[in-house]
Length: 334
Image (cartoon, rainbow, N blue to C red):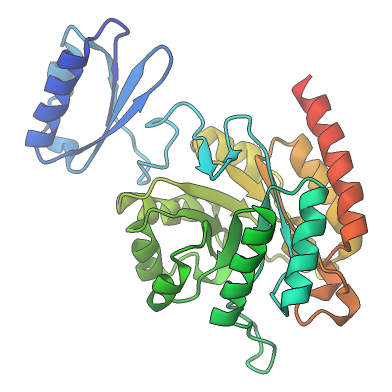
């Protein structure tokens, strides 16, 4: 249930109503916009008399929310959420470029790539330390050592870092990580979602390769229900019958999610296509469709990369994409 307050409601009146809702065993999610305040009620609202609340002088309207996701629902939070990551903002008109290698391979590699993508306009550095691989014989990442190298690159460039967690037991290692990524394979690892929901970290949640948008939002709800509302959604392609690309990039997810949630939306064209030649056109299409950010894999030597070299851009290619992204954003904004 949501309760929209009138513009002339005082802070005291609002607080009194919130305390009454809480006395009924409900959690109250407060969204204060420029012209109105929305109180989202989470819990068993069946005991609340909708007509009684609607009759209050300070209440404009009361609406029952049928969707199971509440905190992630735009009805609860009409205005776009803006998430701050250091000096970087994403959402609500703020755009972020996340770039870096699929996996951290060496100090020289990650430092070199970090400096090059920063010069090209990237605002966050991505890099895998713990790598989920389909084959147990493939490179699994440098793990804790990889995290240390990412932090070294952060110190050298000033860029916040984004990296994936595989297990809740690893959370202590992520103390200095700025954005914790939940990968596609773990999108419905509900115990892991609840664990990161108890942290104060920004969480980048990737859509599973065979999951619906509703399921993605329900996974975001798991995180937010634990108290962490700093969630970024990431579309990275879904599995279809098409075999030419690694996955099928669902660009319709951008406007569809925009209608249903206030959370920022990032597109990963690298994992979606699996082909470096397709990254640029899909990245530009995502920007034109209204994405809040891009996540692009960049490697200084893709042919010899230990992980996903086929979908990685060179620093020079990334520079060209970044320039075109800025032009598309200018067109969309005009």
